[in-house]
Length: 163
Image (cartoon, rainbow, N blue to C red; front, side):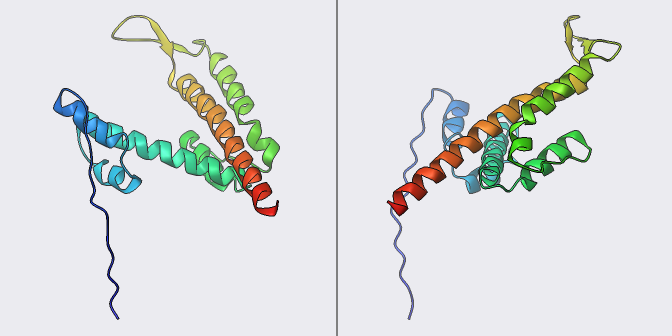
Protein backbone atom coordinates (compact mmCIF):
# COMPACT_ATOMS: atom_id res chain seq x y z
CA UNK A 1 0.00 0.00 0.00
CA UNK A 2 1.20 3.46 -0.72
CA UNK A 3 0.48 6.32 1.58
CA UNK A 4 -0.87 9.54 0.24
CA UNK A 5 0.29 12.55 2.13
CA UNK A 6 -1.40 15.86 1.70
CA UNK A 7 0.15 19.15 2.63
CA UNK A 8 -1.56 22.47 2.93
CA UNK A 9 -0.20 25.12 0.61
CA UNK A 10 2.74 27.04 2.01
CA UNK A 11 2.04 30.74 1.87
CA UNK A 12 4.83 33.01 3.06
CA UNK A 13 4.00 36.67 3.47
CA UNK A 14 6.87 39.14 3.43
CA UNK A 15 6.94 42.68 4.76
CA UNK A 16 9.24 45.61 4.34
CA UNK A 17 10.06 48.33 1.88
CA UNK A 18 13.40 47.08 0.56
CA UNK A 19 14.47 43.68 -0.72
CA UNK A 20 16.66 43.19 2.38
CA UNK A 21 13.80 44.03 4.76
CA UNK A 22 11.59 41.54 2.92
CA UNK A 23 14.29 38.85 3.11
CA UNK A 24 14.83 39.46 6.82
CA UNK A 25 11.08 39.32 7.49
CA UNK A 26 11.18 35.75 6.21
CA UNK A 27 14.44 34.70 7.91
CA UNK A 28 13.37 36.01 11.33
CA UNK A 29 10.35 33.66 11.40
CA UNK A 30 11.74 30.78 9.33
CA UNK A 31 11.83 27.17 10.49
CA UNK A 32 15.12 25.85 11.91
CA UNK A 33 15.88 23.84 8.77
CA UNK A 34 15.36 26.92 6.58
CA UNK A 35 17.67 28.96 8.80
CA UNK A 36 20.31 26.24 8.55
CA UNK A 37 20.03 26.28 4.77
CA UNK A 38 20.35 30.08 4.74
CA UNK A 39 23.27 30.15 7.20
CA UNK A 40 25.75 30.03 4.34
CA UNK A 41 24.27 33.14 2.72
CA UNK A 42 26.37 36.26 2.70
CA UNK A 43 25.50 39.64 4.14
CA UNK A 44 22.80 40.58 6.61
CA UNK A 45 20.52 37.72 5.61
CA UNK A 46 23.23 35.15 6.43
CA UNK A 47 23.98 36.92 9.70
CA UNK A 48 20.29 36.85 10.65
CA UNK A 49 20.07 33.14 9.79
CA UNK A 50 23.16 32.32 11.85
CA UNK A 51 21.85 34.37 14.79
CA UNK A 52 18.55 32.48 14.60
CA UNK A 53 20.39 29.16 14.66
CA UNK A 54 22.50 30.31 17.62
CA UNK A 55 19.42 31.43 19.56
CA UNK A 56 17.74 28.11 18.83
CA UNK A 57 20.83 26.31 20.06
CA UNK A 58 20.87 28.27 23.31
CA UNK A 59 17.17 27.47 23.80
CA UNK A 60 18.01 23.79 23.30
CA UNK A 61 20.79 24.03 25.88
CA UNK A 62 18.39 25.70 28.33
CA UNK A 63 15.77 23.00 27.76
CA UNK A 64 18.32 20.22 28.39
CA UNK A 65 19.52 22.03 31.51
CA UNK A 66 15.95 22.32 32.80
CA UNK A 67 15.81 18.51 32.75
CA UNK A 68 19.12 18.13 34.60
CA UNK A 69 21.32 17.48 31.55
CA UNK A 70 24.11 20.04 31.98
CA UNK A 71 26.50 18.53 29.44
CA UNK A 72 25.42 20.82 26.54
CA UNK A 73 25.82 23.91 28.74
CA UNK A 74 29.25 22.78 29.97
CA UNK A 75 30.30 22.04 26.36
CA UNK A 76 29.17 25.51 25.29
CA UNK A 77 31.14 27.31 27.99
CA UNK A 78 34.20 25.07 27.54
CA UNK A 79 34.21 25.76 23.80
CA UNK A 80 33.78 29.52 24.24
CA UNK A 81 36.44 29.73 26.97
CA UNK A 82 38.85 27.21 25.46
CA UNK A 83 39.26 25.42 28.79
CA UNK A 84 37.63 22.70 30.84
CA UNK A 85 34.33 23.54 32.46
CA UNK A 86 32.27 21.67 35.05
CA UNK A 87 28.58 21.94 35.90
CA UNK A 88 27.93 19.28 38.51
CA UNK A 89 24.48 20.18 39.81
CA UNK A 90 21.51 22.50 39.53
CA UNK A 91 23.09 24.92 42.03
CA UNK A 92 26.30 25.06 39.95
CA UNK A 93 24.20 25.75 36.85
CA UNK A 94 22.23 28.47 38.62
CA UNK A 95 25.49 30.12 39.74
CA UNK A 96 26.85 30.49 36.19
CA UNK A 97 26.34 34.27 36.28
CA UNK A 98 28.44 34.47 39.47
CA UNK A 99 31.18 32.39 37.83
CA UNK A 100 31.20 34.74 34.85
CA UNK A 101 31.22 37.77 37.15
CA UNK A 102 34.39 36.35 38.72
CA UNK A 103 35.90 36.19 35.22
CA UNK A 104 34.91 39.82 34.64
CA UNK A 105 36.65 40.78 37.88
CA UNK A 106 39.71 38.76 36.84
CA UNK A 107 39.84 40.55 33.46
CA UNK A 108 39.53 43.93 35.20
CA UNK A 109 42.44 43.07 37.51
CA UNK A 110 44.84 42.97 34.54
CA UNK A 111 47.36 45.78 34.36
CA UNK A 112 45.26 47.55 31.69
CA UNK A 113 42.18 47.42 33.92
CA UNK A 114 40.41 45.17 31.43
CA UNK A 115 40.22 47.88 28.77
CA UNK A 116 42.10 48.68 25.58
CA UNK A 117 42.11 51.71 23.33
CA UNK A 118 39.81 51.46 20.32
CA UNK A 119 41.89 52.22 17.21
CA UNK A 120 38.92 53.75 15.37
CA UNK A 121 37.52 56.03 18.06
CA UNK A 122 40.42 56.41 20.46
CA UNK A 123 38.07 55.57 23.34
CA UNK A 124 38.32 52.74 25.80
CA UNK A 125 36.67 49.38 25.11
CA UNK A 126 36.73 46.07 27.00
CA UNK A 127 39.72 43.83 26.24
CA UNK A 128 39.05 40.51 24.52
CA UNK A 129 38.96 38.59 27.81
CA UNK A 130 36.77 41.22 29.45
CA UNK A 131 34.36 41.36 26.46
CA UNK A 132 34.06 37.56 26.40
CA UNK A 133 33.34 37.45 30.14
CA UNK A 134 30.68 40.17 29.75
CA UNK A 135 29.05 38.28 26.87
CA UNK A 136 29.11 34.96 28.72
CA UNK A 137 27.62 36.54 31.84
CA UNK A 138 24.70 37.88 29.80
CA UNK A 139 24.25 34.46 28.17
CA UNK A 140 24.44 32.78 31.59
CA UNK A 141 21.69 34.96 33.01
CA UNK A 142 19.47 34.29 29.99
CA UNK A 143 20.22 30.54 29.99
CA UNK A 144 19.32 30.12 33.66
CA UNK A 145 16.15 32.18 33.21
CA UNK A 146 14.98 30.24 30.15
CA UNK A 147 15.82 26.92 31.84
CA UNK A 148 13.70 27.96 34.83
CA UNK A 149 10.83 28.78 32.44
CA UNK A 150 11.15 25.36 30.81
CA UNK A 151 11.23 23.67 34.23
CA UNK A 152 8.11 25.57 35.29
CA UNK A 153 6.31 24.54 32.10
CA UNK A 154 7.28 20.93 32.79
CA UNK A 155 5.87 21.11 36.31
CA UNK A 156 2.63 22.62 35.03
CA UNK A 157 2.37 19.87 32.40
CA UNK A 158 2.98 17.13 34.99
CA UNK A 159 0.43 18.67 37.31
CA UNK A 160 -2.12 18.84 34.51
CA UNK A 161 -1.50 15.22 33.52
CA UNK A 162 -1.76 13.79 37.04
CA UNK A 163 -4.71 15.92 38.10
